[in-house]
Image (cartoon, rainbow, N blue to C red; front, side, top):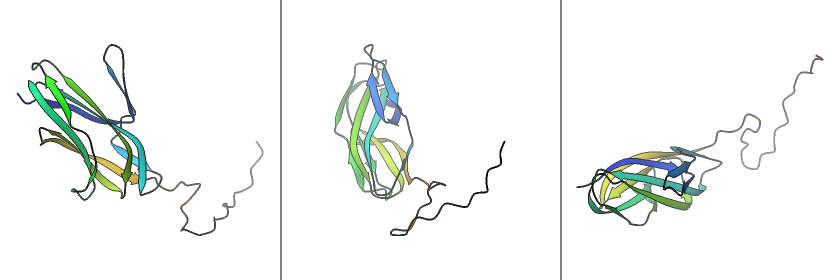
Length: 153
């Protein structure tokens, strides 16, 4: 019986306790980067399979905003469920991901080469800071605003 994908989450890191419990650190659904193109040093993808029986192969990938170019692709991960009461958790770590453009990237999870889930990963540049507005390349920094004198308390 084909398992259900109970959960798929992106996070910064994953730890596993001695008792087998997973700890997900920094769960997110989007990335705000300092500039585009951007390099993101580490991204973890955690998938949880349940209610199935048999041997399967999972593959995951992140597809670019154009919907076709593959930004990264994970290795084939075998999943074996002895019965429908067992769960299988997979953790993939993607290192040094390159995002060439802002937009909605797509996380795709496949089981035995069949797409089981697809969801967006929004990548956008950080807004300019109010204290440090963006300057055109080569422009001199602007002078600080004139502030009214402070009043004694």
